[in-house]
Figure 1 (cartoon, helix red, strand yellow):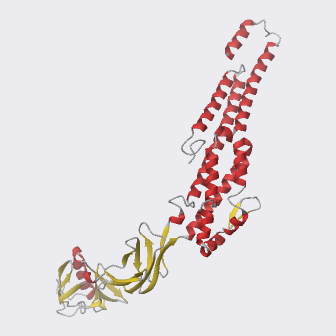
Figure 2 (tube, one colour):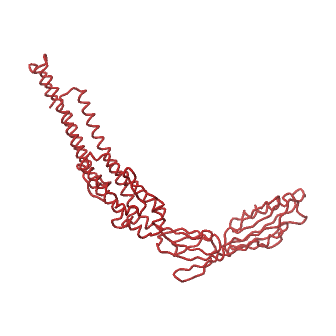
Figure 3 (spheres, helix red, strand yellow):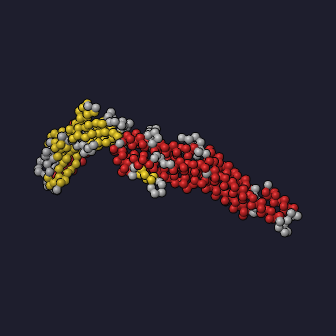
Length: 435
């Protein structure tokens, strides 16, 4: 960062120039021997000039610091540039979806074979019509045992009035009793398909260790003791640098590359998990750089007459970030008004065909981002007095002219008929006002 000029952290030069300008306005306007109406007009004019200069310098600072920020996302010297912002991906997301966890390396390339997915155990009873009454003696009296505990389930097949319960009624009561055991690791539900209901038990977590057993008299829930889906661990093989290792996991979320990558297993099969730069982010960052460069150029074009510095920086920015051949290789050309325009598809194609070469043209030493940052830094480090020296000179001249106009009015007053120099009292008052 520059240490002088009007950069984001050192506004001394800027504030000093503004304070000097305001002081000049105040001193000159206070010395004017003019009527209150004329003096108010002069102060208003001076304030307007000051406000205009201040407004430009704020825009100047904002646009240039914005361009610096856009360039820093692409320059190799910046630790936060998009070329160091690696992403994890999978070639087949039907097998696994990968995402970075922390501190990704840029050269990770892993072959992943998923042999089996982790499953939660599921037991399903026989199905019956919802309002069908259960057979006599179809009481439930069974035990569920899991790795985290056990639960006894006892449901009578008869209502208090002696009538038989329906299958839906018994299954709902059983599900409520099981779900009341929150630490059991098993959840119960009642499935309803085409008017027929079943009692369903499911492990809360996947993996062999989270399976359960049902023993005792299941009564109206015939078949509940049998697993329709067995508890199962995921099985997968990782191959990296020619070395293969098979693993088992109770979960379908696994870690790769020493915890740097999280992968969610979705199906069996083969995929490749790798890390690299997100080309879409590079394109977006270059688009921001081009927009920022154009915005600064336009601001300088509209305000080059304000000072030697503004004109000099416009000349620098007009030279572009690189020669036309280099820019074209990045999908950047000039429009009819002389501003840069980006063909995002062309840039993406360049990244895909020659990533390292394209990266060098963008973010390497003397790349377009480096040059844009250098020009922005130079413009920010310039002194306020040089950037707007023409404005400052014009403002001072205007003040002097306003001051001279006041004395001209006094001269006219002296030459006026009844109020001439013989009226020493009045003349004295006027001189006192000017003091």
